[in-house]
Image 1 (cartoon, rainbow, N blue to C red):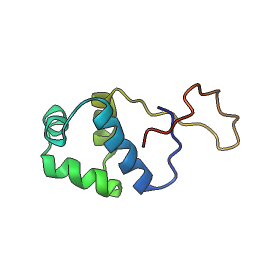
Image 2: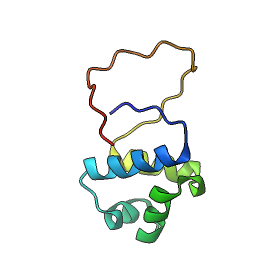
Image 3: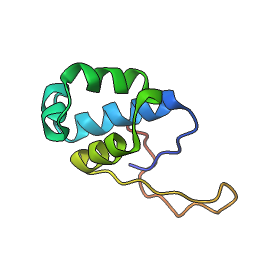
Length: 85
């Protein structure tokens, strides 16, 4: 999955989609990073409350990674044209 994030709402959607792709419930994801299920729910709905540590831990649990690039940079070719969220 390759997505561009421009808003906190988009980040929440990507986190929820990544969790589902990893086959995890919110409770299972919460156990993996040491927070409550309600915290996962909150982060998926309001990712503005997310810490960088939590973001990286969740992405790791979901098999995702964070990449940063210049806006003007030509994106690398993507072979998956279907958005997953």
